[in-house]
Image (cartoon, rainbow, N blue to C red):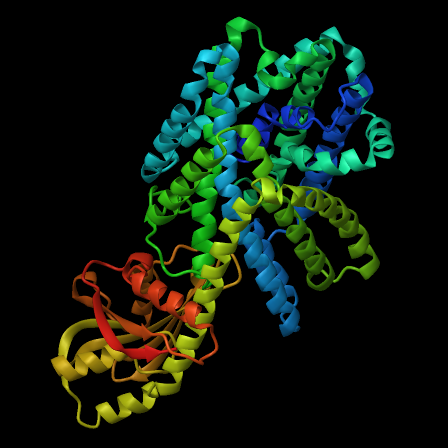
Length: 622
């Protein structure tokens, strides 16, 4: 029991650091953007109304939707939009048309994550460093350069992994929540009546008397739930109970106290609206608070960057992106990975965002469309999981998701007004990634169809070969092929040029599935083809780490010797030539051909040894 309590405490502390870093730093800019927008007249009633809207937004979207409902929709213990997409698609697998639509919607939501992944680190770090302007206006010129230096340092250390610094995430973030709660308490103590804003009638009264203004400011109110999706995405790392415990015991109370403290400050000093968070602190605490806020925003950004690596890896294994280089940064935790292309691609986009928008207020105008659309997509997918996966009655499914759908739709509609003020930026990033993903998926489908059409039957081919067998050489050859039962081009080239066949031959096909994990007991299917040849199918979930040498070690039980020093891996690489009239637009055919050409060798993705051999196959037209 003591060990269980200790483990729960450690997981809860980890959840505070990783899951809630983003939403915890929203206090830096959320209130400032609502009252600084100029749409809300500065009156005591309006301050009470806005604070009430903040509190009930946190309650409805985070406490009720994500913590209470969405966390129940786990995919074998895993969460996140990719896991939800896999769960929803499996729920409607007997409805092909609906399943295709849900897959496209879910993949588009996943693409929007990259747009959010650019805006969030930029606005978080920039808003923290802007605290220097409160210390002294002379620091204003240093804000952007210092922000870029911090961001570069953050991305430069990614290749070292998060194991070394991850253990500090929880304690630092816990200190952050303690400090923002104490800052709020200090100002609430001077005006305890501000706590009456906890009553929903203040929020309802504001909305009733100011419907147009309410709709407009929802685009700024949504800033208080930045990072809400992380609750679900990180469920597999920490579990439901620690995430819920961290929210209700630490995060929600601290956020509420700080927001209400900012409200009390504004009632006392309306001029504090230019930066109410930093003006809550006494002068002597400003510089330490800027330092702590910067650390908190870096931690929040780190969690999002790691999430980008994880999501990209999962999308690759679902077949929507080419195989990118994946480096494991921990020998104990397989989830700790580093992807150079994703890392520096994100960095370039974030630098572009900082230089284009130049302030957290301008970035706030760009923030919201992507995240609210993601929230809306999550709600839609949850409905199909409840209705078709869990077989709940239609009325119950509509009741449980319909309310959240209306709320999400209201926030999304309000944020659409930001489209011309920067909202297009994350949408453009998400749209570009969506085009890449769907082009790769469709191109691979056409390429596989072409290869299958021209492929030779493997059992028949081997039977013909062994009528007059070639010279057999020592060792094992592993031929990777997209379709089981077909002759890989690498085998044809080996027979043609080397005129030999290895003592043992494995024809291996890798299958990726829409489930997070596939255990070792279900990892391999083996079929003997005779003459010491085997057809092998290796199964992976989208959270598994593909490692063929480890997986193929199981074939030893079938009588096949697989020694690392005598095993050669043959990868068939085909040259793709785009052609007209084969199902894709010409520009998408050319894009797919370029992606195929630039894709990293499969040996890097599947952790194959350095002696892997790449064989160029015939030209394929699509």
